[in-house]
Image 1 (cartoon, helix red, strand yellow):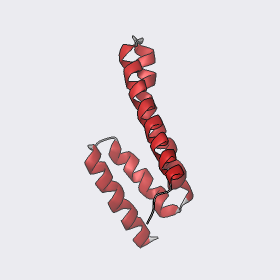
Image 2 (cartoon, one colour):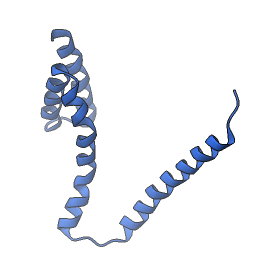
Image 3 (cartoon, helix red, strand yellow):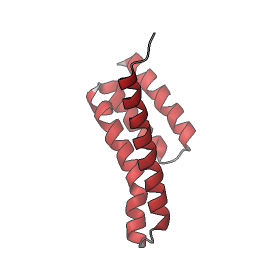
Length: 99
């Protein structure tokens, strides 16, 4: 197996760009003084992105996955993260077996 130099450079360039944007965001966020409202908005970004990534696949794949996603959302209101993941896995396996 040989490595194409163009592909290697593209891969390394994408890695550097990704790393730079992540570090730049952390460095910039540490220097900003935000109002409580702006801080709340920034704190809402990670869950919003997570829902935007998960919701289409949970709603478009079938009834078992949609029902498991609903059960997992309910579990997330009461349980810690590891327990929520376990509930989600068990729910999707159980609903797939039944449906």
